[in-house]
Image (cartoon, rainbow, N blue to C red; front, side, top):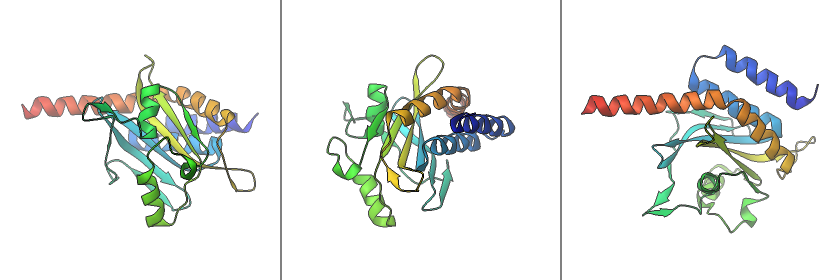
Length: 199
């Protein structure tokens, strides 16, 4: 049995035992990190088709383990002043509906990583490689994004993400689509109920 199959099975077992949806999302991110030996991972949901909302933020090196609503990072607009906010890699992942691999953000000028660089400067962290993967529901509609940071090799040295990593995470996201879809759907229902109640 391959290591990826073992991880898939472990995550499936954890998800089946966990009833809290926010914790389930954290389990999904941790699973994607384990598959690629990534040091950090973030999960965003698409909120009201306008914003990418932080749901989970994990970072092993910095010992960060946060889930919404205990995340103080601002949501990322998909459009700004009516124009697609495509300079943000997580937004462009949504717009293109495909995974994006970046070897080193400090050598990348196609995207705006000023927020990530500010985070690095503040914490002493060093973001290198990034893999950003869209989350699709059963209707093939994008409902969120998983972003993984700093893949590591067997010697625990940072490496770039590769096509095999992308394929593994794509398959993993597909396998966990029910959990992810359920979370997003429940959030939408809560928002709708709140809007009706306020009226």
